[in-house]
Length: 443
Image (cartoon, rainbow, N blue to C red; front, side):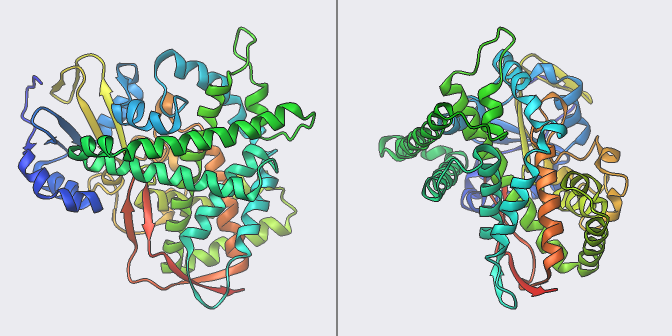
Protein backbone atom coordinates (compact mmCIF):
# COMPACT_ATOMS: atom_id res chain seq x y z
CA UNK A 1 0.00 0.00 0.00
CA UNK A 2 1.29 3.45 -0.91
CA UNK A 3 0.13 6.31 1.26
CA UNK A 4 0.63 9.97 2.00
CA UNK A 5 0.00 9.54 5.70
CA UNK A 6 0.74 6.69 8.02
CA UNK A 7 -1.83 4.06 9.02
CA UNK A 8 -0.94 2.41 12.34
CA UNK A 9 -0.40 -1.35 12.21
CA UNK A 10 -1.45 -3.78 14.94
CA UNK A 11 1.11 -6.61 14.78
CA UNK A 12 0.34 -10.30 14.31
CA UNK A 13 1.66 -11.15 17.76
CA UNK A 14 -1.03 -9.01 19.37
CA UNK A 15 -3.71 -10.68 17.25
CA UNK A 16 -2.47 -14.13 18.30
CA UNK A 17 -2.11 -13.08 21.95
CA UNK A 18 -5.77 -12.06 22.08
CA UNK A 19 -7.04 -14.83 19.77
CA UNK A 20 -9.17 -16.57 22.42
CA UNK A 21 -10.78 -13.28 23.46
CA UNK A 22 -11.40 -12.43 19.79
CA UNK A 23 -13.07 -15.83 19.28
CA UNK A 24 -15.56 -15.03 22.06
CA UNK A 25 -16.06 -11.32 21.33
CA UNK A 26 -13.77 -9.30 19.04
CA UNK A 27 -15.41 -5.91 19.72
CA UNK A 28 -13.41 -4.91 22.85
CA UNK A 29 -10.16 -5.79 21.05
CA UNK A 30 -11.10 -3.70 18.02
CA UNK A 31 -12.41 -0.84 20.18
CA UNK A 32 -9.12 -0.61 22.05
CA UNK A 33 -7.25 -0.50 18.75
CA UNK A 34 -9.51 2.31 17.51
CA UNK A 35 -8.93 4.26 20.73
CA UNK A 36 -5.17 3.84 20.47
CA UNK A 37 -4.74 4.20 16.69
CA UNK A 38 -7.59 6.34 15.38
CA UNK A 39 -10.42 5.63 12.94
CA UNK A 40 -8.38 3.44 10.56
CA UNK A 41 -5.77 0.86 11.47
CA UNK A 42 -4.26 -2.21 9.84
CA UNK A 43 -4.45 -5.56 11.64
CA UNK A 44 -1.99 -8.28 10.69
CA UNK A 45 -3.83 -11.63 10.72
CA UNK A 46 -1.06 -13.70 9.15
CA UNK A 47 2.51 -13.39 7.91
CA UNK A 48 1.25 -12.01 4.59
CA UNK A 49 -2.39 -11.15 5.27
CA UNK A 50 -3.82 -8.02 6.86
CA UNK A 51 -7.17 -6.24 7.16
CA UNK A 52 -7.86 -2.51 7.37
CA UNK A 53 -10.35 -1.82 10.17
CA UNK A 54 -12.31 1.40 9.75
CA UNK A 55 -14.84 3.42 11.71
CA UNK A 56 -14.78 6.46 9.45
CA UNK A 57 -18.40 7.06 8.34
CA UNK A 58 -17.28 9.21 5.42
CA UNK A 59 -15.03 6.45 4.14
CA UNK A 60 -17.87 3.91 4.38
CA UNK A 61 -20.19 6.23 2.46
CA UNK A 62 -17.45 6.65 -0.15
CA UNK A 63 -17.15 2.87 -0.51
CA UNK A 64 -20.88 2.02 -0.52
CA UNK A 65 -22.25 5.01 -2.44
CA UNK A 66 -19.87 7.49 -4.01
CA UNK A 67 -17.35 5.08 -5.51
CA UNK A 68 -19.23 1.80 -5.10
CA UNK A 69 -18.37 0.57 -8.61
CA UNK A 70 -14.74 0.17 -7.54
CA UNK A 71 -15.62 -2.12 -4.62
CA UNK A 72 -16.66 -5.72 -4.28
CA UNK A 73 -17.51 -7.95 -1.36
CA UNK A 74 -14.67 -9.80 0.28
CA UNK A 75 -13.81 -13.49 0.23
CA UNK A 76 -15.84 -13.85 3.46
CA UNK A 77 -19.06 -13.55 1.50
CA UNK A 78 -18.09 -14.47 -2.07
CA UNK A 79 -16.33 -17.73 -1.06
CA UNK A 80 -16.63 -18.61 2.63
CA UNK A 81 -20.38 -17.96 2.93
CA UNK A 82 -21.14 -19.20 -0.59
CA UNK A 83 -20.37 -22.80 0.29
CA UNK A 84 -23.22 -22.73 2.81
CA UNK A 85 -25.87 -20.57 1.09
CA UNK A 86 -24.91 -20.52 -2.57
CA UNK A 87 -24.53 -17.56 -4.91
CA UNK A 88 -27.50 -15.21 -4.59
CA UNK A 89 -28.23 -11.57 -3.82
CA UNK A 90 -26.13 -11.49 -0.64
CA UNK A 91 -23.07 -13.21 -2.09
CA UNK A 92 -23.17 -12.57 -5.86
CA UNK A 93 -21.06 -9.97 -7.64
CA UNK A 94 -21.04 -8.20 -10.99
CA UNK A 95 -23.57 -8.99 -13.69
CA UNK A 96 -25.10 -11.92 -11.81
CA UNK A 97 -25.89 -9.67 -8.84
CA UNK A 98 -27.37 -6.95 -11.10
CA UNK A 99 -29.51 -9.51 -12.90
CA UNK A 100 -30.81 -11.05 -9.68
CA UNK A 101 -31.42 -7.71 -7.98
CA UNK A 102 -33.46 -6.45 -10.93
CA UNK A 103 -35.48 -9.67 -10.98
CA UNK A 104 -36.24 -9.86 -7.25
CA UNK A 105 -36.53 -6.16 -6.29
CA UNK A 106 -40.24 -5.82 -7.29
CA UNK A 107 -41.20 -8.48 -4.75
CA UNK A 108 -39.97 -6.25 -1.93
CA UNK A 109 -41.70 -3.03 -2.97
CA UNK A 110 -44.07 -1.68 -0.33
CA UNK A 111 -47.11 -2.29 -2.53
CA UNK A 112 -46.20 -5.97 -2.87
CA UNK A 113 -45.38 -6.39 0.83
CA UNK A 114 -48.90 -5.43 1.87
CA UNK A 115 -50.04 -8.90 0.73
CA UNK A 116 -47.69 -10.47 3.29
CA UNK A 117 -48.58 -8.38 6.35
CA UNK A 118 -51.47 -10.60 7.45
CA UNK A 119 -49.19 -13.66 7.42
CA UNK A 120 -46.53 -11.69 9.31
CA UNK A 121 -48.98 -10.61 12.01
CA UNK A 122 -50.37 -14.14 12.31
CA UNK A 123 -46.90 -15.64 12.81
CA UNK A 124 -46.08 -12.98 15.42
CA UNK A 125 -49.26 -13.52 17.45
CA UNK A 126 -48.81 -17.29 17.38
CA UNK A 127 -45.31 -17.02 18.86
CA UNK A 128 -46.50 -14.60 21.55
CA UNK A 129 -48.79 -17.33 22.86
CA UNK A 130 -45.60 -18.92 24.24
CA UNK A 131 -45.05 -16.01 26.64
CA UNK A 132 -46.01 -16.87 30.23
CA UNK A 133 -46.71 -13.75 32.32
CA UNK A 134 -45.05 -13.03 35.66
CA UNK A 135 -42.01 -15.23 35.15
CA UNK A 136 -38.55 -14.64 33.75
CA UNK A 137 -38.17 -15.65 30.10
CA UNK A 138 -35.16 -15.52 27.79
CA UNK A 139 -36.88 -13.66 24.98
CA UNK A 140 -34.35 -14.41 22.24
CA UNK A 141 -35.48 -17.99 21.44
CA UNK A 142 -39.09 -16.81 21.11
CA UNK A 143 -38.16 -13.88 18.87
CA UNK A 144 -35.73 -16.04 16.89
CA UNK A 145 -38.50 -18.54 16.17
CA UNK A 146 -40.88 -15.64 15.46
CA UNK A 147 -38.54 -14.15 12.85
CA UNK A 148 -37.90 -17.53 11.24
CA UNK A 149 -41.61 -18.33 11.13
CA UNK A 150 -42.28 -14.91 9.61
CA UNK A 151 -39.81 -15.58 6.80
CA UNK A 152 -41.25 -19.07 6.29
CA UNK A 153 -44.87 -17.84 6.18
CA UNK A 154 -43.93 -14.99 3.84
CA UNK A 155 -42.03 -17.36 1.56
CA UNK A 156 -44.15 -20.49 1.63
CA UNK A 157 -47.49 -19.61 3.26
CA UNK A 158 -48.52 -23.04 4.61
CA UNK A 159 -46.46 -25.19 2.24
CA UNK A 160 -43.88 -26.38 4.81
CA UNK A 161 -44.72 -28.58 7.80
CA UNK A 162 -43.33 -27.88 11.27
CA UNK A 163 -40.77 -30.70 11.10
CA UNK A 164 -39.32 -29.33 7.86
CA UNK A 165 -39.30 -25.78 9.22
CA UNK A 166 -37.49 -26.88 12.39
CA UNK A 167 -34.88 -28.76 10.36
CA UNK A 168 -34.30 -25.82 8.04
CA UNK A 169 -33.87 -23.52 11.02
CA UNK A 170 -31.39 -25.88 12.68
CA UNK A 171 -29.29 -26.23 9.51
CA UNK A 172 -29.30 -22.48 8.80
CA UNK A 173 -28.08 -21.64 12.30
CA UNK A 174 -25.56 -24.50 12.50
CA UNK A 175 -23.91 -23.44 9.23
CA UNK A 176 -23.58 -19.88 10.51
CA UNK A 177 -21.91 -21.08 13.70
CA UNK A 178 -19.40 -23.06 11.66
CA UNK A 179 -18.61 -20.09 9.46
CA UNK A 180 -17.89 -18.00 12.57
CA UNK A 181 -15.36 -20.60 13.71
CA UNK A 182 -13.64 -20.44 10.32
CA UNK A 183 -13.45 -16.63 10.38
CA UNK A 184 -12.31 -16.31 13.98
CA UNK A 185 -9.80 -19.17 13.81
CA UNK A 186 -8.24 -18.94 10.33
CA UNK A 187 -5.16 -20.75 11.65
CA UNK A 188 -7.31 -23.90 12.15
CA UNK A 189 -8.79 -24.06 8.64
CA UNK A 190 -6.40 -26.89 7.75
CA UNK A 191 -7.68 -28.88 10.76
CA UNK A 192 -11.34 -28.21 9.93
CA UNK A 193 -10.68 -29.55 6.43
CA UNK A 194 -8.73 -32.74 7.22
CA UNK A 195 -11.12 -33.72 10.01
CA UNK A 196 -14.12 -33.32 7.73
CA UNK A 197 -15.71 -30.67 9.97
CA UNK A 198 -16.39 -28.24 7.12
CA UNK A 199 -17.70 -31.04 4.90
CA UNK A 200 -20.14 -32.06 7.64
CA UNK A 201 -21.80 -28.65 7.49
CA UNK A 202 -21.73 -28.54 3.68
CA UNK A 203 -23.59 -31.87 3.76
CA UNK A 204 -26.14 -30.33 6.12
CA UNK A 205 -26.65 -27.50 3.66
CA UNK A 206 -27.26 -30.04 0.89
CA UNK A 207 -29.96 -31.57 3.07
CA UNK A 208 -31.59 -28.13 3.40
CA UNK A 209 -31.44 -27.68 -0.38
CA UNK A 210 -33.21 -31.02 -0.88
CA UNK A 211 -35.95 -30.02 1.57
CA UNK A 212 -36.47 -26.74 -0.28
CA UNK A 213 -36.55 -28.48 -3.65
CA UNK A 214 -39.37 -30.63 -2.32
CA UNK A 215 -41.37 -27.55 -1.32
CA UNK A 216 -40.75 -25.90 -4.71
CA UNK A 217 -41.74 -29.08 -6.59
CA UNK A 218 -44.99 -29.30 -4.64
CA UNK A 219 -45.84 -25.66 -5.37
CA UNK A 220 -45.07 -26.02 -9.09
CA UNK A 221 -47.32 -29.06 -9.32
CA UNK A 222 -50.24 -27.31 -7.61
CA UNK A 223 -52.51 -24.79 -9.29
CA UNK A 224 -52.91 -22.73 -6.13
CA UNK A 225 -51.62 -19.17 -5.92
CA UNK A 226 -50.57 -18.00 -2.44
CA UNK A 227 -49.31 -14.50 -3.34
CA UNK A 228 -46.25 -15.22 -1.22
CA UNK A 229 -42.56 -14.71 -1.96
CA UNK A 230 -42.22 -18.18 -3.47
CA UNK A 231 -44.90 -17.35 -6.02
CA UNK A 232 -43.09 -14.11 -6.77
CA UNK A 233 -39.77 -15.93 -7.28
CA UNK A 234 -41.39 -18.60 -9.47
CA UNK A 235 -43.27 -16.05 -11.58
CA UNK A 236 -40.36 -13.61 -12.00
CA UNK A 237 -38.88 -13.40 -15.46
CA UNK A 238 -35.60 -12.03 -16.79
CA UNK A 239 -35.60 -9.59 -19.69
CA UNK A 240 -35.36 -12.48 -22.15
CA UNK A 241 -38.53 -14.03 -20.70
CA UNK A 242 -36.84 -16.94 -18.93
CA UNK A 243 -37.40 -17.94 -15.29
CA UNK A 244 -34.80 -18.61 -12.62
CA UNK A 245 -33.16 -22.02 -12.81
CA UNK A 246 -33.87 -24.24 -9.80
CA UNK A 247 -30.38 -24.10 -8.26
CA UNK A 248 -30.41 -20.29 -8.42
CA UNK A 249 -33.89 -20.26 -6.89
CA UNK A 250 -32.71 -22.43 -3.98
CA UNK A 251 -29.68 -20.14 -3.49
CA UNK A 252 -31.99 -17.12 -3.17
CA UNK A 253 -34.31 -18.90 -0.72
CA UNK A 254 -31.38 -20.00 1.48
CA UNK A 255 -30.07 -16.44 1.51
CA UNK A 256 -33.50 -15.09 2.48
CA UNK A 257 -33.46 -17.52 5.43
CA UNK A 258 -29.93 -16.54 6.44
CA UNK A 259 -30.24 -12.77 6.00
CA UNK A 260 -33.92 -12.44 6.79
CA UNK A 261 -34.46 -14.05 10.15
CA UNK A 262 -31.45 -13.73 12.42
CA UNK A 263 -30.84 -10.02 11.91
CA UNK A 264 -34.51 -9.32 12.68
CA UNK A 265 -34.64 -11.54 15.76
CA UNK A 266 -31.49 -9.87 17.08
CA UNK A 267 -32.89 -6.37 16.55
CA UNK A 268 -36.22 -7.29 18.15
CA UNK A 269 -34.52 -8.77 21.21
CA UNK A 270 -32.28 -5.76 21.76
CA UNK A 271 -35.31 -3.49 21.30
CA UNK A 272 -37.23 -5.40 23.98
CA UNK A 273 -34.29 -5.16 26.37
CA UNK A 274 -33.96 -1.43 25.80
CA UNK A 275 -37.70 -0.97 26.32
CA UNK A 276 -37.51 -2.95 29.56
CA UNK A 277 -34.86 -0.49 30.77
CA UNK A 278 -36.87 2.51 29.53
CA UNK A 279 -40.56 1.89 30.46
CA UNK A 280 -41.69 5.39 29.47
CA UNK A 281 -41.15 4.38 25.82
CA UNK A 282 -43.27 1.26 26.36
CA UNK A 283 -46.17 3.49 27.36
CA UNK A 284 -45.66 5.77 24.37
CA UNK A 285 -45.72 2.84 21.95
CA UNK A 286 -48.80 1.40 23.69
CA UNK A 287 -50.71 4.67 23.37
CA UNK A 288 -49.72 5.01 19.72
CA UNK A 289 -50.76 1.43 18.94
CA UNK A 290 -54.14 1.79 20.67
CA UNK A 291 -54.80 5.08 18.87
CA UNK A 292 -54.08 3.53 15.47
CA UNK A 293 -56.19 0.50 16.35
CA UNK A 294 -59.16 2.62 17.41
CA UNK A 295 -58.93 4.58 14.15
CA UNK A 296 -59.47 1.36 12.19
CA UNK A 297 -56.04 1.56 10.56
CA UNK A 298 -55.10 -1.40 8.34
CA UNK A 299 -51.81 -3.25 8.78
CA UNK A 300 -49.96 -1.23 6.14
CA UNK A 301 -50.99 2.02 7.87
CA UNK A 302 -49.87 0.62 11.22
CA UNK A 303 -46.55 -0.52 9.74
CA UNK A 304 -45.85 2.87 8.15
CA UNK A 305 -47.44 5.31 10.62
CA UNK A 306 -46.22 3.93 13.96
CA UNK A 307 -43.68 6.74 14.25
CA UNK A 308 -42.81 6.31 17.93
CA UNK A 309 -42.29 2.59 17.50
CA UNK A 310 -40.09 3.26 14.46
CA UNK A 311 -37.96 5.72 16.46
CA UNK A 312 -37.36 3.13 19.16
CA UNK A 313 -36.37 0.47 16.63
CA UNK A 314 -34.07 2.89 14.77
CA UNK A 315 -32.30 3.79 18.02
CA UNK A 316 -32.04 0.13 18.98
CA UNK A 317 -30.34 -0.63 15.65
CA UNK A 318 -28.01 2.30 16.18
CA UNK A 319 -26.82 0.93 19.52
CA UNK A 320 -26.89 -2.73 18.49
CA UNK A 321 -26.74 -3.01 14.68
CA UNK A 322 -27.40 -6.67 13.77
CA UNK A 323 -25.13 -6.38 10.71
CA UNK A 324 -22.34 -4.88 12.78
CA UNK A 325 -19.59 -4.95 10.18
CA UNK A 326 -19.41 -4.42 6.40
CA UNK A 327 -16.56 -5.82 4.34
CA UNK A 328 -15.32 -4.64 0.94
CA UNK A 329 -12.29 -5.03 -1.36
CA UNK A 330 -11.27 -2.35 -3.86
CA UNK A 331 -10.82 -3.50 -7.46
CA UNK A 332 -8.48 -0.68 -8.48
CA UNK A 333 -6.33 1.73 -6.53
CA UNK A 334 -8.42 4.26 -4.61
CA UNK A 335 -7.78 7.36 -2.53
CA UNK A 336 -9.70 8.71 0.43
CA UNK A 337 -8.67 11.50 2.82
CA UNK A 338 -4.98 11.44 1.87
CA UNK A 339 -4.84 7.65 2.01
CA UNK A 340 -4.14 5.60 -1.12
CA UNK A 341 -5.22 1.97 -1.10
CA UNK A 342 -3.63 -0.47 -3.50
CA UNK A 343 -5.93 -2.90 -5.36
CA UNK A 344 -7.34 -5.86 -3.42
CA UNK A 345 -7.04 -4.18 0.00
CA UNK A 346 -9.29 -5.88 2.55
CA UNK A 347 -11.46 -3.29 4.32
CA UNK A 348 -13.64 -4.08 7.31
CA UNK A 349 -15.97 -1.30 8.49
CA UNK A 350 -17.26 -1.47 12.05
CA UNK A 351 -20.87 -0.29 11.90
CA UNK A 352 -20.99 -0.84 15.67
CA UNK A 353 -18.20 1.70 16.18
CA UNK A 354 -19.58 4.19 13.62
CA UNK A 355 -22.98 4.13 15.33
CA UNK A 356 -21.32 4.98 18.66
CA UNK A 357 -18.66 7.36 17.41
CA UNK A 358 -18.42 10.31 19.85
CA UNK A 359 -17.79 12.79 17.02
CA UNK A 360 -20.98 11.74 15.17
CA UNK A 361 -23.58 11.32 17.91
CA UNK A 362 -24.68 13.31 20.95
CA UNK A 363 -24.47 11.05 24.00
CA UNK A 364 -23.57 8.08 21.78
CA UNK A 365 -23.96 5.44 24.51
CA UNK A 366 -27.39 6.68 25.63
CA UNK A 367 -30.77 5.33 24.49
CA UNK A 368 -32.45 8.37 22.95
CA UNK A 369 -35.10 7.44 20.35
CA UNK A 370 -36.10 11.09 20.02
CA UNK A 371 -32.98 11.65 17.91
CA UNK A 372 -34.86 9.79 15.13
CA UNK A 373 -38.03 11.91 15.30
CA UNK A 374 -37.39 12.90 11.67
CA UNK A 375 -36.54 9.33 10.64
CA UNK A 376 -33.23 7.71 9.80
CA UNK A 377 -32.63 9.72 6.61
CA UNK A 378 -31.41 12.65 8.68
CA UNK A 379 -28.38 10.53 9.57
CA UNK A 380 -27.94 8.78 6.21
CA UNK A 381 -24.23 9.59 6.06
CA UNK A 382 -23.50 7.99 9.46
CA UNK A 383 -26.27 5.45 10.05
CA UNK A 384 -26.03 2.11 8.24
CA UNK A 385 -28.32 -0.55 9.80
CA UNK A 386 -29.17 -1.88 6.33
CA UNK A 387 -26.03 -0.75 4.52
CA UNK A 388 -26.30 1.93 1.81
CA UNK A 389 -26.08 2.47 -1.92
CA UNK A 390 -27.10 -0.01 -4.64
CA UNK A 391 -26.42 -2.98 -2.38
CA UNK A 392 -28.54 -1.74 0.50
CA UNK A 393 -30.47 -4.64 2.03
CA UNK A 394 -33.33 -5.53 -0.32
CA UNK A 395 -35.48 -6.55 2.64
CA UNK A 396 -35.18 -3.34 4.68
CA UNK A 397 -38.88 -2.45 4.30
CA UNK A 398 -39.92 -6.03 5.04
CA UNK A 399 -37.79 -6.05 8.20
CA UNK A 400 -39.06 -2.68 9.44
CA UNK A 401 -42.70 -3.60 8.84
CA UNK A 402 -42.21 -6.90 10.67
CA UNK A 403 -40.45 -5.26 13.63
CA UNK A 404 -43.01 -2.45 13.97
CA UNK A 405 -45.90 -4.94 14.00
CA UNK A 406 -44.04 -7.23 16.42
CA UNK A 407 -43.18 -4.50 18.94
CA UNK A 408 -46.59 -2.81 18.69
CA UNK A 409 -48.41 -6.10 19.30
CA UNK A 410 -46.14 -6.93 22.22
CA UNK A 411 -46.71 -3.57 23.88
CA UNK A 412 -50.48 -3.95 23.44
CA UNK A 413 -50.37 -7.19 25.43
CA UNK A 414 -47.63 -6.71 28.01
CA UNK A 415 -45.48 -4.45 30.09
CA UNK A 416 -41.94 -5.77 30.29
CA UNK A 417 -39.38 -5.55 33.08
CA UNK A 418 -35.68 -6.44 32.94
CA UNK A 419 -34.25 -9.46 34.69
CA UNK A 420 -30.69 -8.70 33.68
CA UNK A 421 -28.04 -6.33 34.96
CA UNK A 422 -26.83 -5.08 31.59
CA UNK A 423 -27.33 -5.90 27.91
CA UNK A 424 -24.85 -8.57 26.84
CA UNK A 425 -23.85 -9.42 23.29
CA UNK A 426 -22.46 -12.35 21.33
CA UNK A 427 -20.91 -11.13 18.06
CA UNK A 428 -21.16 -13.92 15.47
CA UNK A 429 -21.93 -13.35 11.78
CA UNK A 430 -24.52 -10.97 13.19
CA UNK A 431 -24.62 -9.20 16.54
CA UNK A 432 -26.60 -11.53 18.78
CA UNK A 433 -28.06 -10.88 22.26
CA UNK A 434 -27.16 -12.94 25.29
CA UNK A 435 -29.16 -13.59 28.49
CA UNK A 436 -32.10 -11.43 27.39
CA UNK A 437 -34.18 -12.38 30.43
CA UNK A 438 -37.42 -10.39 30.71
CA UNK A 439 -40.50 -10.48 32.90
CA UNK A 440 -43.86 -9.95 31.16
CA UNK A 441 -46.79 -8.40 32.98
CA UNK A 442 -50.19 -8.70 31.31
CA UNK A 443 -51.78 -5.33 30.56
